[in-house]
Image (tube, rainbow, N blue to C red; front, side):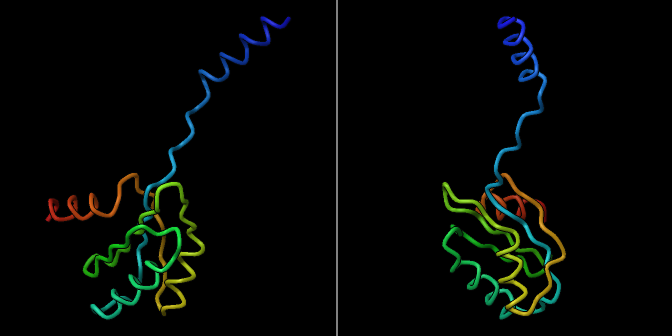
Length: 111
């Protein structure tokens, strides 16, 4: 009985979908950013969050990328609240498995 139970458990674990890795960063699409002052305001607010390692604002594409400090998790609701309090609308979030520096490199390479 114990062997059957153990085999069943091992089979289940082998077939189970792997857990998604925690996002290293979050990418947010923002409405209302029209100038460098807007971008700078958002960047400063998000950089003050204790779990934030780095922030990148792409004004032309209306994107904000927030990278978590090692061992920290990013809270979409908290980030969205900061952006809304700054006067902008968050359209949506997308998890990224890359950090801010790599996102910048990829963005430059895509142009």
